[in-house]
Amino acid sequence: MPLRKIENGSWQHPARLPLGGGWSGHCTAAGHDTEIPSQDVLEGFCNLGYASGCAWVPSERAWDAVRFAVVAPAEAEKRWKPNEQGERAIVLRYVCERNHRPVEHGELAYDIARALWLQRHDDSRLQKMAECFLESCTQKRI
Image (cartoon, rainbow, N blue to C red; front, side):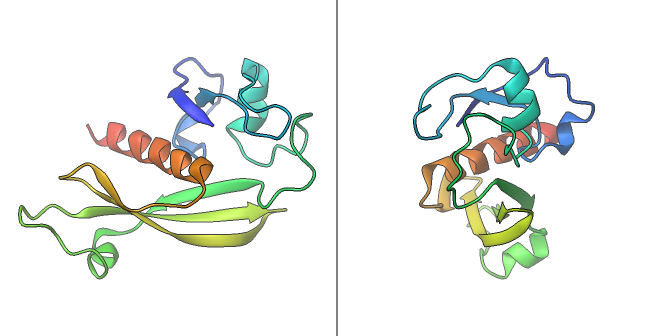
């Protein structure tokens, strides 16, 4: 469960990470709930997805990794019209993967002006990852 950005990670290209940068937080794997992974585990597994080499990863899981992308503004406008001030929603597309294959996908939407999610994900872990990805994206544009 990502909680705060890692500013001193050793990734060669941190912007290419699934959440747009490195994050620290606590584990959500059964039996390790709330445990804090070491920096090596965060850098080698948690922030990359496909953590099958991690000793804490459960063998039975719905997905291994989640990937996010920002939907192009013109395509997003088809579903989320600009508000009265002309501000648009940011639409994120996500794909959950298991063994390098998609098992779930969808879209989430965030209203920029009101700073609230118009469409959230039911899984709190995925929703938190989306919030971190959005934070990384918006910080790059500031």
